[in-house]
Image (cartoon, rainbow over all chains, first blue to last red; front, side, top):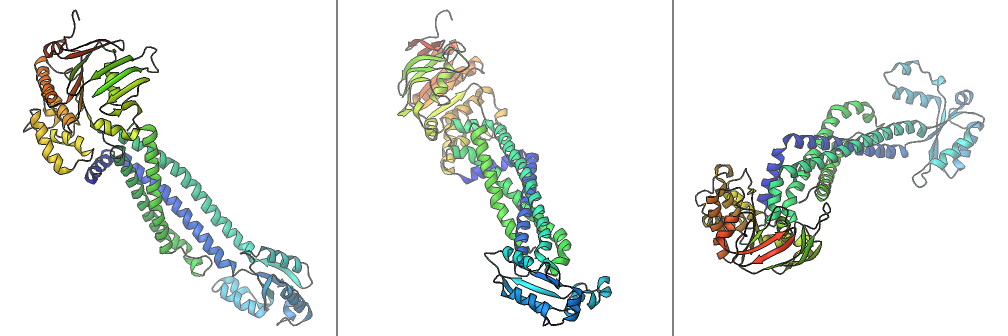
Length: 304
Length: 229
C-alpha cells in the first residue's frame, strides 16, 4: 500500500468538500460532547454514591422532653432505645448527640447564615445517629429495620433517613445523565447520516478516479481506503473538538457552578483527570464509529 | 487468451438476451474487430470480459482465469491483465498527462522508481514524448486518446479492449490511433476493438466478429465491414 497515495487522495477529498467536512466534524463533535457529558455525569454519580454510602446514617431524633433531660443517654428511655439499636445485627454503631453538640454542629454547618443566629440549643433535638452495616453494598434492609423499630416508640420524634435526602440529588443527576444520553443519541444519528452522506458525495465527486481505479485493477483497499480514512479523520477531529469542549465546559461552567458544594465535599469535584480520561475515550469512539459508518456506506451504496 | 463458451446474458429489463449463446475464441496476439449495430451486444461482450457483469449462462476464460466464477477479491487480478480504452477517453481532468498514466500504476501499488521509469517509456511509445506535463484539456482529441491508450498499456496487459476508440475522432486522427493500436498489437498484446467504423475495418483487413441481436452472425479472418452496410 502506497501511503503517499492515500494521504494525497484523502487531502484532496477533504479539501473538495470543505463545508461538508466542517458540518460532519461539528455534528460529530457535538454528539461526542454530549456522550462525554453523560459519561462525566455517570462518573460523578458513582463517586457521590461512594462518598455517601459510608457517610450516610439514620438519625433518630428524640422528643423535646427527652432531649432536654438527658445529656448523655443514660436515662431509661434513651438507653432503652440505644440498646435496642445496638443489639441489631444490621447496625454497625450508635452515637448520641445531645442538644449542645447538635447546636455546635448546627453553628458550624450554617456559619454566617441568619438561621445560625436564631437557633438555640433547646430548639434542636438530641439524636441517636445510627451507622448501618453494609450488606452486599446495600444498607437498605438495615434502614428499613431501624425505621420499623424506632418509629412511634416513646421518646422518638422522627426517624430521618439521610439517604432519602441524597436520593433526590441522585435522581437529579440521573435525570441529567439520561437527558444528555438521549440528546447524544439523536445527535449521533444525525452525525452518522452526515458521515454516510458525505462518504457518498465524496465517492460521487471522485467517480471518475474510482472508475479508472477499478478498470486498471486496483484492489478494494486502494479504492476504499481514502474514503474510510477521510471519515475516520473527521471522526477523530470531531472527538478532539468534543474533548476541548468538555475542558472548556469544565473550566467555564462546571467549576464555578459546583465550586461551593464540591469544596464542602457534598459531591465530588469534576477533576481535570476525569475530563481528560473521558476525552481520551471519545477519540477511539469517534474514529471507530466514523470508520464503521464509512465502511457500511461504501458496501451498501457505492459501487467501488 | 480469450474464450467464450455459449455465453448468454439476460438483463432483467429486457426479454431478449443481450448476448445469446455466443462462442468466440481469440488467440494470443490476435487483433479482432467486434462489429454490429447499436444494441447488438458489443458493449455487453466487453463488460463480461472485464467482469463488470457476470453471464447468465456459459463460460468465459481470460488467460487462465474463469471470469464468471472469479471471486470478488480476485477481480483486480483479472483487470490488471486487461487494458481498456473508451470512446470518451476517461482521463482525470485535474491531473497532467504524466500523472494520468502514473495513476494507473500507483493504484496497483507499483513503486515510485518503477513509475518514473515506465511512464516516459510508454508516453514515447504512443507518441506523446515531451507532453507529460500538459493537462488533458490542452490536448487534441487524438492526443487525449493516446494518453488513454498509454494508461491502458502502461502495465503491459495481455489484452487490450477498445470500445469505439475512434468514435469521437476525425478520419485522419482515427487512422493514427489505429496505427498505434497495431503497434501495440505487434508487441504481442491481444486487441479486441468494438467499432462502427467501416473504413477502419475495411482498411485493416483483420478478423471480424459480427454481432446482431446478441448472436454471432459472422466470424471471418481478414474481413471487411460487410457489403451493403
